[in-house]
Image (spheres, rainbow, N blue to C red):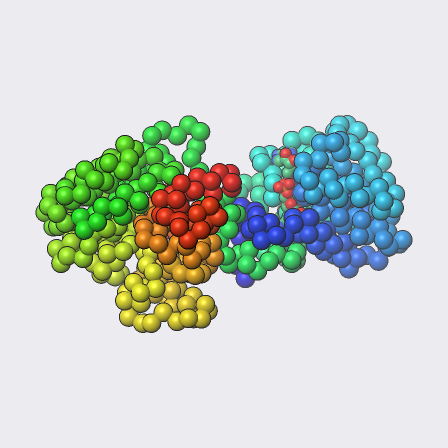
Length: 492
Ligand SMILES: NC(=O)C1=CN([C@@H]2O[C@H](COP(=O)(O)OP(=O)(O)OC[C@H]3O[C@@H](n4cnc5c(N)ncnc54)[C@H](O)[C@@H]3O)[C@@H](O)[C@H]2O)[C@H](O)CC1
Ligand SMILES: [K+]
């Protein structure tokens, strides 16, 4: 089974909450698993739980409550700090249940010297390390640092909850850590718990299930948005993405919709290169757009020298919206795609594509069912499993990332496959595909192809759902653009 990073785990947790699984339920399962582990090691004895003020400590409170049901165990708890400073709702809740759980001793100790004078460190059969888990930032501070020293010098059997406290679950350098006899981590193996030599800190590692919903991993959710590359506070203009949109000629609304969607998703600069016959009309949609008129009434090979320069000066090139399918246009697309570092290809441009593209640029395709069927030369199957197979196979063979739009969107790069179910039947109106393409372009500037494509279909569908609540089947593509920021702000 593959391992995951701690930020991936946080994103799965957030997707669980979105699906209605209360984080308290996960904590209950995590704590119960720790209690079972203790019971499998000793049938009676003294067990000290050392808890920090985050959810790692919350897991320890749950485990202590479960264990205290059995009279053969002498259960004690040290909370590092005052209970009024417990950070999370779940942990507070579980701390408050301790007073009704028949636990012999609950001490709240903020001061490191008081921690050193605690008399029982060397007298325990098991010490449970719930000091710090995946939420650690930097090196352990006080009183956590002293607690780690005391745990390590206790001579007891040490069970670390989720991670040895101080240890980096993502495999970074370790300055100070609990040296555990056993680490019980949750849901999946973590990247840092399988690097060579890590057993020096982790002891044996066990992965236990905690009741995560299966769909929290397979279906895109707000947790995936949480871990997207974000704008830094000290960012300059252009740091958060320069997007070039090549479209229009046959139509003018489509490139304008893509461009506005890219801006609303957070792109810094959106340049839209369109044939001169539609340039003024596209400009008139918004003063926020930089419009570059191209010679001619359709994209054509004479535009290539000018576009080459623009492609180089932008992070992502979106090709397709409103281009039309003239022979010369499709031939131009074929020559442009290999010049792009990162490209999003949609609509008419999908007809000018020769795959695989030899240049090694990263490419996202956003076809609907008929477009995909034409690309891969097969009917798109109705069954979801079969659909996943065919998209994954095609993406792998052609070295592209595909977001196949549909009732349930299927996103794959051939290695990973994700699903998305935001969106609604009102979104069959014209222009919604152009909106998705623009969102994808903006996200692609700061993220890898799979993250960008997965989050783009989620955002586009969720914005469409908000627009549907307001407008029903009268919703327009522009209504979806208006709600993009609501979806993004809700997550951050
Ligand atoms: N799905 C799961 O895996 C679940 C995991 N659970 C447990 O939750 C923790 C993560 O909890 P979180 O509250 O995010 O963080 P921590 O408890 O690890 O610590 C945060 C806490 O500590 C403070 N802090 C941060 N850095 C330092 C430092 N260098 N020195 C001192 N103190 C520090 C910070 O201010 C916070 O107060 C995970 O590991 C699991 O054990 C859930 O219970 C169930 C689902
Ligand atoms: K821990």
